[in-house]
Image (tube, rainbow, N blue to C red; front, side, top):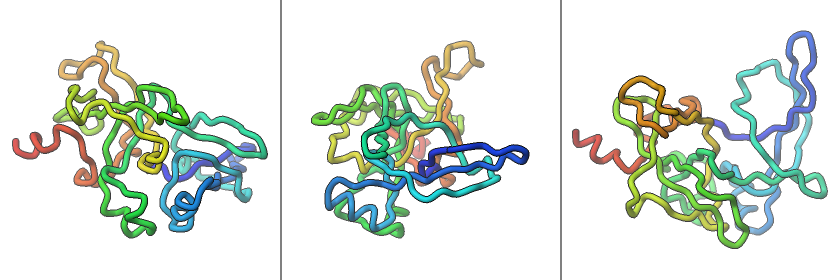
Length: 205
């Protein structure tokens, strides 16, 4: 699954040698600094460019990410309306500060319903897996696990954006209109690491 951001500086020919710089998190407070020191994945907030590196491996890159270029060489990344993101389920910033503990977390998939606001956060909606499909998800029913807000101090729950394609209704029978086909490489390899509202019912069947 995607874990780092990189700024591509140049593609050298022949051979497709890629020159890039990894983004390094730029924490604004002590709690964020603890997560950086603990090597936990950080997907939102401010970043700076790290050292320059090169690679021939095109498969090291997942997808393009929209960011805001700020002052002093900083880049800002936040979830945007219409995107699909993965969340750590029940992740507590105070509970874990080591990569070992993050294996205990499960992931859930949400649709971003609003742009990020500094004092409000971002509104999201849970997505439910469509039965009999590997990476097809649809909007969960409006229940207690449907629409909710991720507050500014909870942005650490976001783990990465998931590339997606929205179904238009012209797909084969059984594919819900408005559902999302997600990039399987951005989903957990182990199905037990994924959580979605209908999973309990699915397991009972």
